[in-house]
Each structure stands twice: as C-alpha cells, then as structure tokens.
Length: 123
Image 1 (cartoon, rainbow, N blue to C red):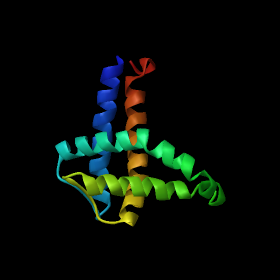
Image 2: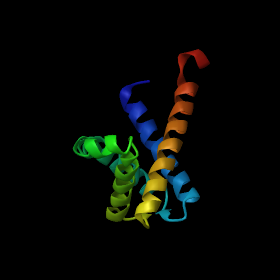
Image 3: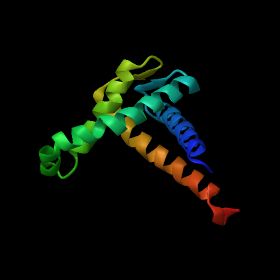
Image 4: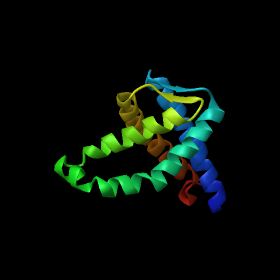
C-alpha cells in the first residue's frame, strides 16, 4: 500500500480512537466523526511539532519523576487542543491526562490491528 493511503488510514483510525475515548471519558466530548477527524489531525500536528520540544525542555523534570512528567505533557497538549477546537472539548486537565492515555492505547491497538490485517502474511 502506498504512503498516502497509509497516512489516510492512520488518520481515520486515530479519529475512531478519539471517538472511543469520548465514549469512555465523560469529560471529553466530540461532536461527530468530522470533528474527530479535525481533532485527530491537530493532535497529530501538535504531537509532531510541539511535544518533542516540550520533552526536551522538561527533560530534567522528566528524569526526576522517572518519566511520569510525560503524562503531564501529554495531558496538557490534549487539553489545549480540546480548548482550541470547536467540536472537541476536554473539560479539565485531568480529563486531558486520562484522555491522552486512552487515546494512545486505542490508537496503538487500532493501528496494530490494521497492520496485522494488511500484512502480506495474512493474505
């Protein structure tokens, strides 16, 4: 499968993961699949561009907390994206932390399942 189709599939799977998170966490609200697509795009953008810089800047704190500060960074970024976008709302920081954790798990599970289904060994 070519790279553009893989990126499109990953984007759709991340949107589905975000919808699943909204169903599990009462403080996270997504207005529909279109809003989930937009939010998944911006979460990916923030995680690609801003998160590495924050991880580098907070490296001493992250080392002192044995990596637990990464949950604070992830939750904050999830919360910020939920505060900026219309149709995607994260009620509080703690909802953001839980939402970011579940979003990572659901996204990983869906991506892994899709990779297994599309592997050449599975045909």
